[in-house]
Amino acid sequence: MTSPIRLRAMLRPALAAVLLAGCEPTGPEQHPVGVLRYPLGLAVEPAGRIAFVANTNFDSRYAGGTVNAVDLETGEVLPTAFSTAAYAGKLVGRANDQGHFDRLYVVTREDGALRWAETSVTDGRVSLSCGAEAAQGALAACDALHTLDGAGFDPYGLVLTSDARRLYSAAFSGQIGIFDVDEAGTPVASVEASAPTGLYGLAVHPSGGGNLLYATSKFRNTINSVRVHEGDASSSPLLAVDEAVVLSSPLPGREFARDIVFSPAGDLAFVAYRGPPAALAVVATAIGPSGVPANTVVGATPLPDSPSGLAVVERDGRQRVYVSLFTKDLVAVVDPVALRVIDLIEVGDGPFDLAVGQVGGHQVLAVTLFREGAVGVIDIEPGSTFEHREIKRIQ
Image 1 (cartoon, rainbow, N blue to C red):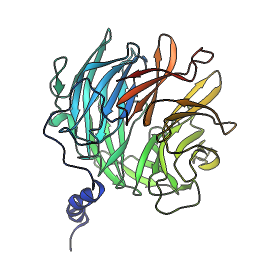
Image 2 (tube, rainbow, N blue to C red):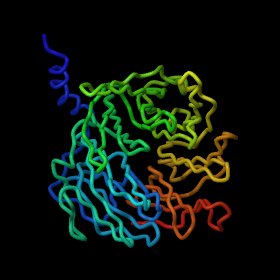
Image 3 (cartoon, helix red, strand yellow):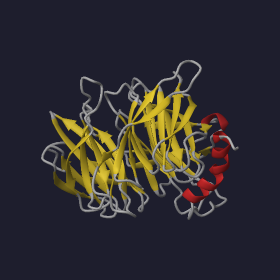
């Protein structure tokens, strides 16, 4: 009889072929540095000025994609980047005490890998290294130390715990990758565990001690909370998938949920739900005295179409949820208490991922514009003359 481990290994090539069916072979040339093409994943430093962008090589023109840096203040695409495989997903960073990223992590769907790079930011100059630092204007290639298997087949979701000691990835095939991160920021693949198929968005509950995950699915009308039980020194962590939270009545053949984020207190989770009908779903997730989260749907705000990325901003006790609407070239602003859309912001073509930053003392929202090959910058400073307007488009 074939062992489960052996059977899993036999299934990997076939499953990968199915999940990536339709993806064209990549071209022979390296992706150019300082160019945004089909950008998807986005991470902005806590210091607020520098954004990092994952270019997906979606049209397979080049040998792979890149991660490069963008200055939100000057509007420049900076001349430094490191290479990735094609079809990058989420991008996350580890921040130092000055609010600058010193490590970047990204998953790529083409090879099911996690790549990471050392980063530094000094006086607006950004350097990236994933094996060897590239000269300005050159592309850094990642060596074996900076490229890890274990993210599953076709990964998109990626999240770093608040203590920066663990990374979790989520793949469409149903794998959750667990990567322990040492003090230097070096990840090590710990375990690859199975969960429901179609995993997409991934978030860590702010009050769950880094061991309570929430995952959305493109294939199901549900979200799952997943508990990570630590093993002893000789065993790997184990996953326990809780009962799913049903978001709507199922409609076969649809893509359901995309991104998921928590409120700062962790009492609510917000889900970009494509439905139909499209909506921002709000789920109560406060953890009770027994240690169990509520996990009940409290409402939904109807949206025009194709919600994708999410960002939550809380100021003076007031929360706003920003939702990118991919096919509408809009970013919706939602009041999660009133459950209504209070504004629609016009942006460029194909808005996807969102991240909050700072430009000139104003709070801004950066958005990747996938089809346009750009990053938009939206003023979200309360009371600003240009509040909820796109003030810059970086290409």
